[in-house]
Length: 82
Length: 204
Image (cartoon, rainbow over all chains, first blue to last red; front, top):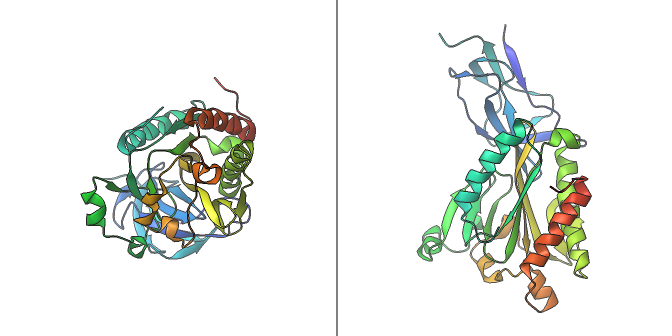
């Protein structure tokens, strides 16, 4: 089962954000509370936590691209590093 | 705090962010930086008006940082505030937080008889067509860092090296608007009051 990394609600009237930096790449393992990606909106950078421990399966939105709030940014395969 | 190296302030921020994440109290650092150019996550090369090497040859460091926004410069006389707040206590809303920061600056400037305003679609605080305060924040686990820079007695010549925030509009300062040096401690004292008021904080 793959877990979708979702762009969370950032505030009223904020409907989208731009991907600034991915801190993890496909194949890498992340911890639940790790900042996986930084998104930018307005004059704020927001660190999105993994939400689940596991391996990054696929990045769906690349750096510089926009994503809607509630949209999936990446797929994470839950699990622990072998 | 007086003049504080950017790197030292960054170390302080990281330490304080982790303390606030673990339930520590909202903390505000006020300081000034020796001249330093910082690049936000949206920084573009074309916003350098002289080459990075020319900037470095004047002994000014260029630092990439994880705040929102474009390129900016900090220099003595500019009052920097770093509010390390848990935004979970303030409604978890980036837009409201940025609005509140602008209000802090607007209230402060009002005390000095300056009518300032925020502008739709362009963060910061403005006096007429000129910008007096810049904002750029980072948020991790809903704890804020980086913050706001208000030009008190800032030598505005530093803003000719870059296009601050990528904008073509000029910067101004309290000193320029009032035609005299302003007591920096007075600015800082009032700034603390405005933060307390706008964020309903108890001063310790």
